[in-house]
Image (cartoon, rainbow, N blue to C red; front, side, top):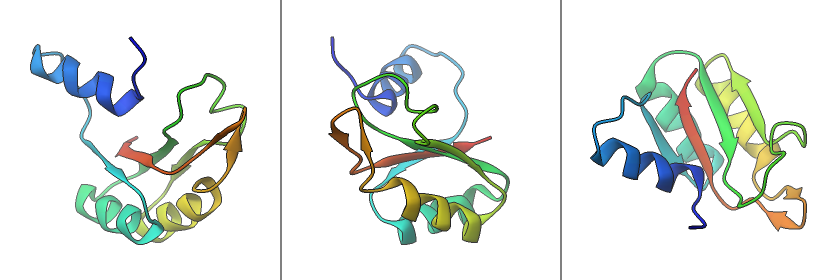
Length: 93
């Protein structure tokens, strides 16, 4: 099965696995909104079907909504091993 991280987490949640709160976003403005709703430090994670996202700079910790938006601006559109980032997962850190 070939899933994005957020898809796998949705399946885990259906089976009662405890997960941190998070949401998928496709614009920096949406990332800021989600981070503001979560109300704490968040992680902005590139959603591509390949490994090595963290080493490539596709996983970044943000201290608040403005920082999350800035991190999303850096991640969205980035190329990670031939995969363009179109969406990010914003989760509690």
